[in-house]
Image (cartoon, rainbow, N blue to C red; front, side, top):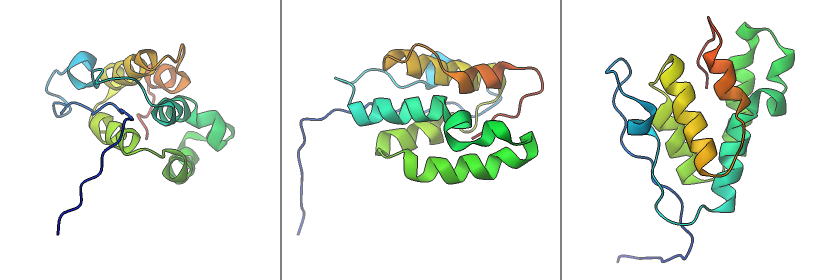
Length: 128
């Protein structure tokens, strides 16, 4: 038996990205608009952009931040599209990763993205 469900909500579907080190640009990785942006997807990107502060990781040393961020993101990224976006940008490094996140934040109506700014700092560890 097959079940099919329909919805009038639209969430962006992340485009397949190029593997890290392939010279890919943020434009090749960031999802394109596929319809109206769902509020819960926008909230996911907002949570990702502000994860350091919201998780409390900004109060920790860089070596202590990763597990706190990962544990906080699990229950706070709620949409499939949000999880897919994380998977899409995971292999990126440096400016390419920051640009992909910042581009997606702007696309969904978020003016600034502190995590992208953090990823641009010299010697920054690209997490999550």
